[in-house]
Length: 341
Ligand SMILES: NC(=O)c1ccc[n+]([C@@H]2O[C@H](COP(=O)([O-])OP(=O)(O)OC[C@H]3O[C@@H](n4cnc5c(N)ncnc54)[C@H](OP(=O)(O)O)[C@@H]3O)[C@@H](O)[C@H]2O)c1
Image 1 (cartoon, protein in one colour):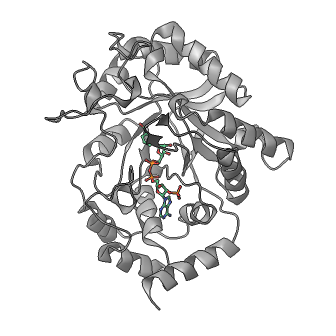
Image 2: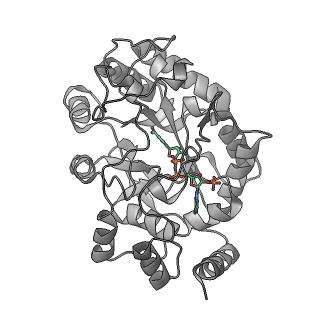
């Protein structure tokens, strides 16, 4: 049987065994997070962030809940919060889940970094979703911007105090960070009153983030890995260099376990104690991506996949690289800011 035949067979078998009971991970504040989250960022084109059409995302989330997804990753800038909220409320009213069974992560956008704006921002989220609280609220970037997207000098420690307010008010059960580097994370640990429980960063075979993950772990912080497929999939309509779905290393491991290369990469994320956040709006891939909790990679297989590392980021907003709190390494030719039009 060829590779595509084998992949099809694996997927048919999994589609028939419907519900996946996803393991949970304990956070520093005692709460639990489901060990995989569905990404809901629909991407970007010339007109800005791509919006869901005809409630496509709501329908994806309805299906996702039926097959076992309990964790949804969104952000104010993705414009998907309302449809996620609608789907969750529908499933609660149908008696399929209770609110406490579902975990929603969302993120504060850069233009709402002043302390008092953080509470306004979360109230807007709750208004959009029709929910009383979110489970995890993250500062999306350490970078503060004014409403016109010019740089604001608001310190992310001021923003963190706003996050602590939101948690105190019960509007977000847990709080954390996204796209903070090690020094910035250390500063929040040193100067904050509450420790961040989670750090969301880019993690895939081309950026394995060994140091940042082990530092976060040493502090008891849960790491969430975004863009888990790396170069395996097209990004912005482009095929970037790096391993593909037919990479011999991934295919060999996949065949051993009766899984697909995509599942092997997601399992590699899980086996590194990171919560993967794969995005799909495709019903078959929704089933494929959650069927990763019935096998485990060996340390040698994990190490083989680690060898793809080239520290390549696909989320690299170099247009902000002159901002004092830019978290990443600078590049010689920054791109222009798509948010400013
Ligand atoms: N904190 C941050 O700054 C940040 C940045 C980026 C992303 N994120 C979060 O992380 C999530 C995931 O990241 P991402 O969307 O960049 O990348 P990703 O999940 O690695 O890749 C998504 C792409 O892979 C395709 N795909 C999904 N499952 C597949 C499978 N099994 N086989 C083949 N193709 C598959 C999807 O297409 P289909 O939909 O057609 O299946 C889509 O084109 C986002 O949605 C967002 O929630 C956070």
